[in-house]
Length: 534
Ligand code: CA
Image 1 (tube, rainbow, N blue to C red):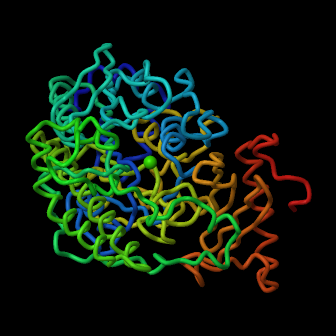
Image 2 (image 1 turned 60 degrees about the vertical axis):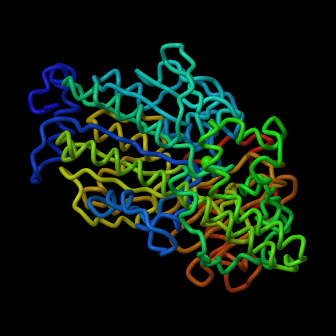
């Protein structure tokens, strides 16, 4: 595909907005005359410390890291509401949850509202989504083409997944989810490379969401290794609101089967709950599963029967099982990101393609003893965000300004040369990518989690600045937390009641109120700052 001629878009983009935007983007830099392709690579629950570009040393993700090395890494990238469906709705709309209507998992998706892919399509892009959609209600015309995971409540399956397609078909594809989602994505890009239109590909993996089953090629990746535990694995929850110790996210509470601890081959019926995930596999896949897992599962049962798992030993064991499967699923994403990047190289499209890698939120991978998200604490709040666009972004760019998932839609509109609607709440990241950070860049972000009761969590909202975080838990009862992230990066001791932080606390309350006004957060029973809270 050659974009230099670009006859189709020439007519569409000849208006003043686009001409001005593109002249603005490329003034004084490499001249590129056509809107870029956009490849949006997305995973589910991918914690920053399990992506080696973020530098924890726990594992290696060389393919995802290429995006950062050859482009940019955002070191302060956050979500607005740390749970799957709301994050996806925010990314599509550029709006906080109270504006796009997806407050929590299970909220109905209003597909008629503004979404950036439809705007790109109207402007001449060819658009598609392959993989995990997970909003309640199938896509309609948000994308020109789509093929989304179905089954398991919209989560889809790791093995031989079922898809719903834009042409009305429902099909099952044999193979591993990340591989078959990438196969479909590459086949679609092959077709797009035959024409002149730029394309937007959204390739959205299921991994590493629970119940994590790696592909056979990675099942034994960490055998015999003892992986480092997070320092807060045995958190006591002192120093925080009463809600922290009451939530149901403990790694130690994970059921055996979601850690792939199963009976040995032949010792159970595949029709039996909870072994449906094994019934989905072909006989060959199931044999590979048992070959990989049976020796360790046999050892586990022996240790249980010998009474070896006393005190913290079972937590430590479950952490190892959890993190090894998690990282093996991440490795499968990494393989497939590599396939997409190689495809762009082979088709000489890398230069003018914006590649984005992100995940719907972060994840606690054992920090605070937890395995989930939802909270406003750093591991859950932070989203990985990497972008490569050789025509525009300098290799090795590090961006430390605070960005949020409300910014994705305006950014992708902006890079395509399209106007950003006034009611979109995020900001284009393009000035940051061009290393032309505005001095007026935001100094704080707003967060609001609505799915109380699930996991025994409260409802809460908060503000994070570069140094501080104020969290207001307001339902069922009011409690506050204030963290000084410079002094206490692990968020173990709230300083809300500390006299020396009084002025910080009061300033942050004002900032929180200002953010509520800026984002037009309704003052209804469920979302308001109650009387007497300031
Ligand atoms: Ca998720």
